[in-house]
Length: 157
Ligand code: INI
Image (cartoon, rainbow, N blue to C red):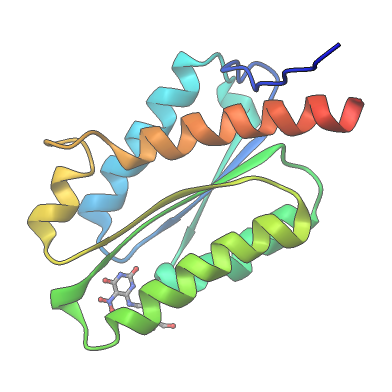
């Protein structure tokens, strides 16, 4: 018999850690609100959520890895905004943060929702943080719940 396995969109009972940045806080607070609204909608309990603030996007992966290594979380969500106009180091900060987030997920097996905006301007960042083009915080939260649920089923056989 063919098996078909999908994650569910229930966050009930899930322990979720969120790492967000102080850099571009006007944007990241909106991403955080989107993520929290989503988790609440999917049935997460406020007591099962942990929010950690780091200075900037470059610091996300190391803190994410610490949380993942603790084995206390079913899923993690990375929120941040790297804006090209703000720094000549855009490519380094955005690239290292993005690949670091992916690496943490692959190395630890804890799903890490990717809510890191890499954009040209503050306007574009705000658009993706709930103003016009959806909220990437919400999307990152939803995908991490689905992926955590999927991984749980695969691990339980
Ligand atoms: N950090 C961000 O999260 N977003 C940015 O747009 C940004 N810019 O533009 O420089 C940024 N820089 C800080 C970086 O993430 C580190 O905190 C810093 O380099 C110290 O390691």
